[in-house]
Length: 125
Image (cartoon, rainbow, N blue to C red; front, side, top):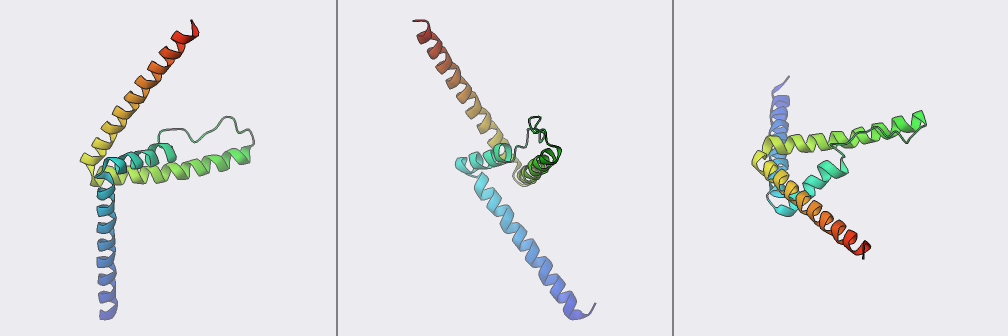
């Protein structure tokens, strides 16, 4: 390797490091806001289906089932990368995201129970 290649390689590595720093700063900026954390949670767990199965027993055609599973696994892989980056680079904000999601889920469940009770009370009248 000649000197010009070494200089070019060093410049490329520095550029890659700088770009990675920008990516991590962007991630931290997103997770620093309540709305950003809510959006990130929805992407990781709902859009990427991180905690659900890729198998769909309703698809009986083997080729269609395989394509569906491959598609779902691809989505889950994206979710895993997003989860790992947030956990590794913004662990405190990740914990905050999970706590906020839990609080929102509990509030939604309480509201659902209240509406179900109210609907049950009016059905008996």
